[in-house]
Image (cartoon, rainbow, N blue to C red):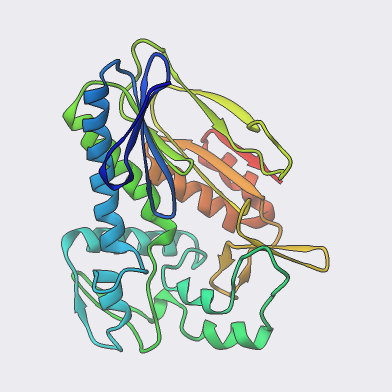
Length: 302
């Protein structure tokens, strides 16, 4: 297998029949699989994807100082006017809040002050969670596009929708640039730009949740569309035999009760798939019933 490194962490490898471009973003591995024998074309298409996801990360990561999220979170009650792209994400988050009856809430990120999902038994006190919960609630936000105003102490976090948005944006930009079929995979959330011609389909594995598992839980043939996964395979707490998932219910500040360990959904776009997998987790014990009602293909692991 040939391998060649490029600037800013991009590398290429020949996987036999197709090329793979790889880079890191959003805290994890990213790759673009290209149905081509051209190294140069793979480099170009990977650069398109990488530049776009790096742009999105720079703009919307809560860890970056000076970006729009940081300015909103440091506004101390002042109104902030946002650009069209940010407004689009806020509108989408507002829709998710409404259809989930408050289960999905981009203001819930402040709960990370109490919860640190590092695999330990450090479960916060009820008092600590209740205190922080006072700063959570989209119903306390004033949003009149393009102006957003939040109470002092509140914050927003696009982490629940950002990676899926980045996958779709990268896939769309590649699709506009070439008719080569590509699989865009950002840490397991992925989309196909067009149906492959030579392979007939891309082979995709769904990661098993068991720590000892060395093979995927499911192998899928994907020609078109996208997949997204929500779950607690790597981020959790474990105390007195109880596993606490990192997916919190913003209505009470605690991990969703009786939620599946992992939910993967297939949909037309990664954003749609991510929305449905997250909403399913928020349904807890009723996750499968929720997904059945959506008439989508899914894989649920408890």
